[in-house]
Length: 236
Length: 303
Image (cartoon, rainbow over all chains, first blue to last red):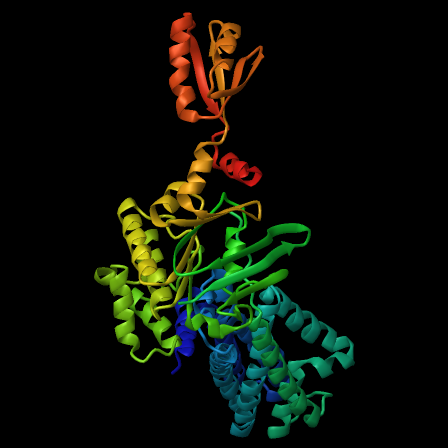
C-alpha cells in the first residue's frame, strides 16, 4: 500500500465524519428487509427503495462525504502541505486518493444494494446493482475530488449537483439526464440485469461513454489543479 | 550548495499588493526574514516554496522555477506557519511517512535521524494530537528535514516555543547553516533574528526595506531619530536648554508639553537629567513615543 493511500485511509477512518456513512446504507438495508418480510410486491417497493433511495441518495451522498473528504479535509486543515512538499508527480497523489474514495464508497454502497437487489428480484439484479454502483462510485468520486480542488465549498456544490440537478431537474427536464451520473448507473444496471424495476431514458452506450468521460475528465482536472495548488497567505 | 533567487518578484491579490518587486539571492548560511505582521513575509515564503505563483518576476532554485515543479522538493524543505499535522499519527509515523514519500533509501533510519535532530525521541511514539505547540513544531521540522534538504524555509519557527526549545531550535538552525545549508526563517521579533542570523532581509509593507549584515542594520535602527514627550515644571526653559544639546535635533512646545527629537538615544537620555538638575527644573514625565517595531521598520524604508 502506498504511503498516500495509507495516510488517506487513516485520515478518513480516523475522522468522526466517517460515522456519517453508516446510517444511510443501514436504512436502505432495513427498508428492503422490512418490505420483503411483510410480503410487499417488489414492483411496489423496488423502484422507490432501489432507485429513489439507493441510487439517488445513498450512492451520491456517501460518495460526496468521502470524495470531498480524501483531499478536501486535508486542504481545510492545512495538512495537505506535508504531502505537496514532496517530489511526487501530482498524479501520484490524486490517483491513490481517488482509489481510496471510490473503493470505500463502492464497498459501502454496493453491499446493501446487492442485498436489496437480491431481496427485490434475483441475485443477478443484486450483482448488476453492485457493479453499476461501483462504476458510479468511481465517477462520483472523481467529480467530488475535483470539486474539492476547484472550490472552497465542495460539499455545498456537490449537494446542489446531487439534489437540484440530478434529483429535481432530472424529473422535469429530461435533457439534464444526459449529464446525470445517477442515470448512467441506472442504465448500466438495467443493461446487466433487465427487469421492470429500473427505468431510464439514457441509452447504454451514452451511459458507458459518459461514465468513462466523467471519471477521466475530472481526474485529469484534479491533477492539473493540484499542480497549481496555491496556499493563501494567512493574515495574522 | 543551492541558491534560491528572486528576481523582481511581486504578488498582488486584486488591487492589494502583498509583495512588491523583491529581488534577492539566498546562499548557504542562515538568513532572517524580518518584518512586522502583514508585511508579506508569508506570501514571499510561499512563493519561494512553490505554493504561490508570482504575479510578476521569477523565483528559482538553482535556475529551476519553484512553481509547478515538485522536483524542487528534493532540495527544499518547508515548515509553514500553520501548525497543521495529522494528529492521529505518532511523530515517528509522521516523519517516516515523509521519508517514504521522499523515496529515501532507508526511510526508517532517516526518520530516526531527523527525530534525533529535533530531540523528540522520548515522545516519538505518542500521537501528535497530544503534543504541546512547541513539540508539534519540532515534529514538523523533523519531517521537513528528513531528506536533508539543501534549502530549508521556516515561517515563524519560534512561535509558541518555550525559551529552552527556542534556544535548541536556534542552535539547530545555526548548525545547519554552518554545514552549508541555505536556511531562511521569518520572524517579526528583532531579538530572534539577532540571535540566529548574521544576514537579514527586512520587509516592510511588501517591500524589501533593508538587506545585509544584521549589525549594520541594527546600528541604523538605533541611530534613527527618537521622539520623546517631556513634561516639566518649566517647559519653555527646558526647551531652550535642550536645543543647545548636540544630541537634540528639534524641540516643539505646545500646551501638553515638549516634543523632543533626539538623534542619539543614549546621549539624550543621559543629558536630560543633567540639564534639568542644573536649571532647577523638575521633569514630570519622559515618554519615548513611537517606539513600535512598525515605526522602526518604516524608518528603515525611508533611510
